[in-house]
Length: 348
Image (tube, rainbow, N blue to C red):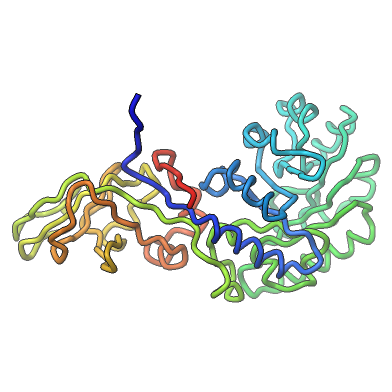
Protein backbone atom coordinates (compact mmCIF):
# COMPACT_ATOMS: atom_id res chain seq x y z
CA UNK A 1 0.00 0.00 0.00
CA UNK A 2 1.41 3.40 -0.97
CA UNK A 3 1.09 6.61 0.99
CA UNK A 4 -1.52 9.00 -0.32
CA UNK A 5 -1.80 12.73 0.15
CA UNK A 6 -4.56 15.09 -0.90
CA UNK A 7 -3.94 17.99 -3.31
CA UNK A 8 -5.06 20.30 -0.49
CA UNK A 9 -3.54 20.75 2.94
CA UNK A 10 -3.84 22.92 6.01
CA UNK A 11 -0.53 23.79 7.62
CA UNK A 12 -1.46 24.24 11.28
CA UNK A 13 0.92 26.14 13.54
CA UNK A 14 0.96 24.41 16.93
CA UNK A 15 3.15 27.07 18.52
CA UNK A 16 0.76 29.82 17.41
CA UNK A 17 -2.26 27.99 18.85
CA UNK A 18 -0.52 27.57 22.21
CA UNK A 19 0.77 31.14 22.23
CA UNK A 20 -2.76 32.41 21.57
CA UNK A 21 -4.15 30.38 24.47
CA UNK A 22 -1.39 31.59 26.80
CA UNK A 23 -2.11 35.22 25.93
CA UNK A 24 -5.84 34.72 26.49
CA UNK A 25 -5.08 32.91 29.74
CA UNK A 26 -2.96 35.84 30.93
CA UNK A 27 -5.72 38.29 29.93
CA UNK A 28 -8.18 36.21 31.94
CA UNK A 29 -6.34 37.05 35.15
CA UNK A 30 -7.30 34.82 38.05
CA UNK A 31 -10.06 33.16 36.01
CA UNK A 32 -9.42 29.79 34.40
CA UNK A 33 -9.14 29.99 30.63
CA UNK A 34 -11.05 27.30 28.79
CA UNK A 35 -11.46 26.65 25.07
CA UNK A 36 -14.38 26.37 22.68
CA UNK A 37 -13.58 23.43 20.38
CA UNK A 38 -16.99 23.08 18.74
CA UNK A 39 -17.33 22.71 14.96
CA UNK A 40 -14.44 20.22 15.05
CA UNK A 41 -12.13 22.70 16.73
CA UNK A 42 -13.23 25.51 14.40
CA UNK A 43 -12.17 23.31 11.50
CA UNK A 44 -8.72 22.35 12.80
CA UNK A 45 -9.67 19.00 14.36
CA UNK A 46 -11.14 19.05 17.86
CA UNK A 47 -9.29 16.03 19.27
CA UNK A 48 -5.83 17.30 18.39
CA UNK A 49 -6.67 20.85 19.53
CA UNK A 50 -7.88 19.45 22.85
CA UNK A 51 -4.74 17.32 23.31
CA UNK A 52 -2.45 20.27 22.59
CA UNK A 53 -4.30 22.65 24.90
CA UNK A 54 -4.41 20.09 27.72
CA UNK A 55 -0.62 19.90 27.55
CA UNK A 56 -0.50 23.71 27.76
CA UNK A 57 -2.64 23.72 30.91
CA UNK A 58 -6.18 24.20 29.64
CA UNK A 59 -8.74 22.18 31.63
CA UNK A 60 -12.20 23.31 30.44
CA UNK A 61 -13.56 22.61 26.95
CA UNK A 62 -16.84 23.30 25.16
CA UNK A 63 -18.58 21.68 22.19
CA UNK A 64 -22.04 22.30 20.78
CA UNK A 65 -23.79 18.91 20.75
CA UNK A 66 -23.37 15.30 21.82
CA UNK A 67 -22.20 14.07 18.41
CA UNK A 68 -19.11 16.22 18.97
CA UNK A 69 -18.38 14.48 22.29
CA UNK A 70 -17.70 11.01 20.84
CA UNK A 71 -14.12 11.60 19.55
CA UNK A 72 -13.24 13.46 22.76
CA UNK A 73 -14.67 11.16 25.44
CA UNK A 74 -11.36 9.40 26.07
CA UNK A 75 -9.68 12.76 26.81
CA UNK A 76 -12.03 13.58 29.70
CA UNK A 77 -10.71 12.68 33.14
CA UNK A 78 -10.93 13.92 36.70
CA UNK A 79 -9.00 17.07 35.86
CA UNK A 80 -10.53 17.78 32.46
CA UNK A 81 -14.09 18.92 31.84
CA UNK A 82 -16.09 18.96 28.61
CA UNK A 83 -19.40 20.83 28.45
CA UNK A 84 -22.07 20.50 25.75
CA UNK A 85 -23.46 23.94 25.04
CA UNK A 86 -26.76 22.89 23.46
CA UNK A 87 -27.85 20.96 26.52
CA UNK A 88 -29.60 17.61 26.34
CA UNK A 89 -32.58 16.85 24.12
CA UNK A 90 -34.75 13.87 24.90
CA UNK A 91 -32.85 12.01 22.16
CA UNK A 92 -29.54 12.77 23.90
CA UNK A 93 -30.39 11.58 27.39
CA UNK A 94 -29.02 8.04 27.22
CA UNK A 95 -25.69 9.29 25.89
CA UNK A 96 -25.58 12.30 28.23
CA UNK A 97 -26.26 10.24 31.35
CA UNK A 98 -23.51 7.76 30.45
CA UNK A 99 -20.94 10.37 29.40
CA UNK A 100 -18.32 12.12 31.49
CA UNK A 101 -19.20 15.33 29.63
CA UNK A 102 -21.71 17.75 31.20
CA UNK A 103 -24.78 19.24 29.54
CA UNK A 104 -25.23 23.01 29.60
CA UNK A 105 -28.96 23.01 30.29
CA UNK A 106 -30.55 25.91 28.46
CA UNK A 107 -34.35 25.46 28.53
CA UNK A 108 -36.86 24.79 31.26
CA UNK A 109 -37.67 21.51 29.53
CA UNK A 110 -34.03 20.41 29.64
CA UNK A 111 -33.78 21.30 33.33
CA UNK A 112 -36.93 19.29 34.11
CA UNK A 113 -35.67 16.35 32.03
CA UNK A 114 -32.30 16.31 33.81
CA UNK A 115 -33.92 16.49 37.24
CA UNK A 116 -36.36 13.70 36.39
CA UNK A 117 -33.48 11.48 35.26
CA UNK A 118 -31.52 12.31 38.41
CA UNK A 119 -28.61 13.43 36.28
CA UNK A 120 -25.39 14.42 37.96
CA UNK A 121 -23.31 17.56 37.64
CA UNK A 122 -24.46 19.98 34.96
CA UNK A 123 -24.00 23.54 33.77
CA UNK A 124 -26.80 26.03 33.09
CA UNK A 125 -26.94 28.78 30.46
CA UNK A 126 -28.69 32.06 31.31
CA UNK A 127 -29.79 34.40 28.53
CA UNK A 128 -28.88 37.93 29.65
CA UNK A 129 -29.83 39.76 26.48
CA UNK A 130 -28.85 37.79 23.39
CA UNK A 131 -32.20 36.03 23.04
CA UNK A 132 -30.63 32.84 21.86
CA UNK A 133 -30.26 29.81 24.16
CA UNK A 134 -30.69 30.02 27.91
CA UNK A 135 -33.10 30.56 30.78
CA UNK A 136 -34.40 34.13 30.78
CA UNK A 137 -32.53 36.28 33.30
CA UNK A 138 -35.84 37.96 34.20
CA UNK A 139 -37.36 34.68 35.37
CA UNK A 140 -37.08 33.04 38.77
CA UNK A 141 -33.74 31.43 37.99
CA UNK A 142 -32.96 30.34 41.58
CA UNK A 143 -36.20 28.37 41.69
CA UNK A 144 -35.69 26.94 38.21
CA UNK A 145 -32.25 25.50 39.01
CA UNK A 146 -33.03 24.37 42.55
CA UNK A 147 -32.08 20.73 43.05
CA UNK A 148 -29.43 20.69 40.31
CA UNK A 149 -25.80 19.87 41.00
CA UNK A 150 -24.71 23.07 39.34
CA UNK A 151 -21.07 23.12 38.25
CA UNK A 152 -21.06 26.31 36.17
CA UNK A 153 -23.55 29.10 35.55
CA UNK A 154 -22.90 30.62 32.13
CA UNK A 155 -24.12 33.43 29.95
CA UNK A 156 -22.94 34.64 26.55
CA UNK A 157 -22.09 38.14 25.38
CA UNK A 158 -23.96 39.24 22.26
CA UNK A 159 -21.84 42.17 21.06
CA UNK A 160 -18.52 42.10 22.89
CA UNK A 161 -16.69 42.65 19.60
CA UNK A 162 -18.28 46.12 19.43
CA UNK A 163 -18.37 49.02 21.85
CA UNK A 164 -22.02 48.82 22.86
CA UNK A 165 -23.99 49.38 26.08
CA UNK A 166 -25.41 45.86 25.80
CA UNK A 167 -22.20 44.27 27.11
CA UNK A 168 -22.35 46.36 30.28
CA UNK A 169 -26.04 45.53 30.72
CA UNK A 170 -25.31 41.83 30.37
CA UNK A 171 -22.47 42.14 32.87
CA UNK A 172 -24.76 43.79 35.40
CA UNK A 173 -27.49 41.19 34.92
CA UNK A 174 -25.07 38.27 35.27
CA UNK A 175 -23.41 39.82 38.32
CA UNK A 176 -26.80 40.08 39.99
CA UNK A 177 -27.53 36.42 39.22
CA UNK A 178 -24.20 35.38 40.71
CA UNK A 179 -25.48 36.71 44.01
CA UNK A 180 -28.72 34.74 43.71
CA UNK A 181 -27.73 31.39 42.19
CA UNK A 182 -25.20 29.12 43.86
CA UNK A 183 -22.78 27.41 41.50
CA UNK A 184 -19.19 26.25 41.77
CA UNK A 185 -18.14 28.65 39.00
CA UNK A 186 -19.50 31.48 36.86
CA UNK A 187 -18.55 32.21 33.24
CA UNK A 188 -19.46 35.03 30.84
CA UNK A 189 -16.57 35.93 28.52
CA UNK A 190 -15.83 34.69 25.03
CA UNK A 191 -12.74 35.83 23.09
CA UNK A 192 -13.98 39.40 22.73
CA UNK A 193 -15.20 39.45 26.32
CA UNK A 194 -11.69 38.62 27.53
CA UNK A 195 -10.51 41.75 25.75
CA UNK A 196 -13.09 43.86 27.61
CA UNK A 197 -11.19 43.43 30.86
CA UNK A 198 -11.15 41.59 34.18
CA UNK A 199 -14.67 42.62 35.24
CA UNK A 200 -16.04 40.23 32.61
CA UNK A 201 -13.83 37.25 33.50
CA UNK A 202 -15.62 35.85 36.61
CA UNK A 203 -14.26 32.34 37.34
CA UNK A 204 -13.74 31.03 33.81
CA UNK A 205 -13.44 32.41 30.29
CA UNK A 206 -14.38 30.54 27.10
CA UNK A 207 -12.34 31.80 24.13
CA UNK A 208 -13.03 30.47 20.66
CA UNK A 209 -12.10 32.43 17.54
CA UNK A 210 -8.99 34.05 19.05
CA UNK A 211 -7.46 30.65 19.80
CA UNK A 212 -7.40 29.93 16.09
CA UNK A 213 -6.00 33.23 14.89
CA UNK A 214 -9.10 35.43 14.75
CA UNK A 215 -8.94 39.00 16.00
CA UNK A 216 -12.06 39.67 18.12
CA UNK A 217 -11.18 43.24 19.12
CA UNK A 218 -8.38 45.76 18.62
CA UNK A 219 -6.84 44.80 21.97
CA UNK A 220 -5.79 41.47 20.46
CA UNK A 221 -3.91 42.98 17.50
CA UNK A 222 -0.22 42.14 17.74
CA UNK A 223 -0.84 39.35 20.25
CA UNK A 224 -2.93 36.77 18.38
CA UNK A 225 -1.05 34.83 15.71
CA UNK A 226 -2.29 33.15 12.56
CA UNK A 227 -2.71 29.39 13.05
CA UNK A 228 -4.19 28.11 9.79
CA UNK A 229 -2.36 28.24 6.45
CA UNK A 230 -4.30 26.57 3.60
CA UNK A 231 -2.25 25.36 0.64
CA UNK A 232 -3.38 24.09 -2.75
CA UNK A 233 -1.51 22.19 -5.44
CA UNK A 234 -1.32 23.31 -9.06
CA UNK A 235 -3.06 20.86 -11.40
CA UNK A 236 -2.21 22.65 -14.62
CA UNK A 237 -0.31 25.67 -15.90
CA UNK A 238 -1.72 27.04 -19.13
CA UNK A 239 -1.42 29.95 -21.52
CA UNK A 240 -4.48 32.11 -22.08
CA UNK A 241 -4.30 34.20 -25.28
CA UNK A 242 -5.49 37.79 -25.30
CA UNK A 243 -9.22 37.90 -25.94
CA UNK A 244 -10.00 34.58 -24.22
CA UNK A 245 -12.00 34.39 -21.02
CA UNK A 246 -11.44 32.34 -17.88
CA UNK A 247 -13.87 30.22 -15.91
CA UNK A 248 -17.63 29.99 -15.56
CA UNK A 249 -19.67 32.80 -17.09
CA UNK A 250 -16.53 34.29 -18.63
CA UNK A 251 -16.13 36.83 -15.85
CA UNK A 252 -12.42 37.47 -16.56
CA UNK A 253 -11.26 38.63 -20.00
CA UNK A 254 -7.55 38.35 -20.79
CA UNK A 255 -6.61 41.73 -22.24
CA UNK A 256 -3.08 40.45 -23.03
CA UNK A 257 -1.56 37.01 -23.30
CA UNK A 258 -1.25 35.57 -19.80
CA UNK A 259 -0.27 32.44 -17.89
CA UNK A 260 -2.54 30.95 -15.24
CA UNK A 261 -2.24 28.16 -12.73
CA UNK A 262 -5.35 26.08 -12.02
CA UNK A 263 -5.52 24.93 -8.40
CA UNK A 264 -7.32 22.02 -6.79
CA UNK A 265 -9.40 24.35 -4.58
CA UNK A 266 -12.97 25.59 -4.71
CA UNK A 267 -16.11 26.46 -2.84
CA UNK A 268 -16.67 22.81 -1.85
CA UNK A 269 -13.52 23.26 0.25
CA UNK A 270 -14.70 26.49 1.86
CA UNK A 271 -12.92 28.79 -0.58
CA UNK A 272 -16.15 30.51 -1.52
CA UNK A 273 -17.13 32.54 -4.53
CA UNK A 274 -16.59 35.77 -2.62
CA UNK A 275 -12.90 35.30 -3.41
CA UNK A 276 -13.60 35.39 -7.17
CA UNK A 277 -11.45 38.11 -8.71
CA UNK A 278 -10.50 39.28 -5.19
CA UNK A 279 -8.51 36.57 -3.45
CA UNK A 280 -4.85 35.70 -3.95
CA UNK A 281 -2.22 33.00 -3.40
CA UNK A 282 1.37 33.41 -2.28
CA UNK A 283 4.62 31.82 -3.37
CA UNK A 284 8.23 33.02 -3.18
CA UNK A 285 7.09 36.36 -1.72
CA UNK A 286 4.76 37.07 -4.63
CA UNK A 287 0.98 37.38 -4.31
CA UNK A 288 -0.90 35.92 -7.26
CA UNK A 289 -4.42 37.25 -7.89
CA UNK A 290 -7.39 34.95 -8.42
CA UNK A 291 -8.75 35.38 -11.94
CA UNK A 292 -12.23 34.35 -12.98
CA UNK A 293 -14.89 32.75 -10.86
CA UNK A 294 -14.08 30.27 -8.10
CA UNK A 295 -15.84 27.01 -8.98
CA UNK A 296 -16.69 23.95 -6.90
CA UNK A 297 -13.25 22.32 -7.08
CA UNK A 298 -11.01 24.68 -9.04
CA UNK A 299 -9.57 28.18 -8.81
CA UNK A 300 -7.29 29.97 -11.28
CA UNK A 301 -4.55 32.49 -10.44
CA UNK A 302 -2.38 34.70 -12.62
CA UNK A 303 1.22 33.41 -12.68
CA UNK A 304 2.42 35.39 -15.70
CA UNK A 305 5.27 36.96 -13.72
CA UNK A 306 6.57 33.63 -12.35
CA UNK A 307 7.84 31.43 -15.20
CA UNK A 308 9.13 28.69 -12.87
CA UNK A 309 5.83 27.96 -11.12
CA UNK A 310 4.66 24.62 -12.53
CA UNK A 311 2.24 21.72 -12.29
CA UNK A 312 2.64 19.96 -8.94
CA UNK A 313 3.85 23.04 -7.08
CA UNK A 314 2.06 24.23 -3.95
CA UNK A 315 0.71 27.73 -3.38
CA UNK A 316 -0.28 29.19 -0.01
CA UNK A 317 -3.73 30.74 0.15
CA UNK A 318 -3.63 34.31 1.47
CA UNK A 319 -5.77 33.60 4.54
CA UNK A 320 -4.99 36.11 7.23
CA UNK A 321 -8.43 36.05 8.83
CA UNK A 322 -8.99 39.79 9.12
CA UNK A 323 -7.76 40.52 5.61
CA UNK A 324 -9.51 37.51 4.05
CA UNK A 325 -12.76 38.53 5.73
CA UNK A 326 -12.49 42.02 4.24
CA UNK A 327 -11.75 40.60 0.78
CA UNK A 328 -14.44 37.92 0.72
CA UNK A 329 -17.26 39.43 2.76
CA UNK A 330 -17.21 36.37 5.04
CA UNK A 331 -16.74 36.50 8.80
CA UNK A 332 -13.59 35.17 10.41
CA UNK A 333 -15.73 32.37 11.85
CA UNK A 334 -16.99 31.32 8.41
CA UNK A 335 -13.47 31.34 7.00
CA UNK A 336 -12.30 28.83 9.60
CA UNK A 337 -15.28 26.55 10.09
CA UNK A 338 -15.97 26.30 6.35
CA UNK A 339 -12.63 24.67 5.54
CA UNK A 340 -13.65 21.28 4.20
CA UNK A 341 -12.80 17.67 4.87
CA UNK A 342 -10.75 17.34 1.67
CA UNK A 343 -7.79 19.15 3.27
CA UNK A 344 -5.04 17.12 4.88
CA UNK A 345 -4.52 18.69 8.30
CA UNK A 346 -0.82 18.84 9.13
CA UNK A 347 0.36 20.15 12.50
CA UNK A 348 3.78 21.76 12.55
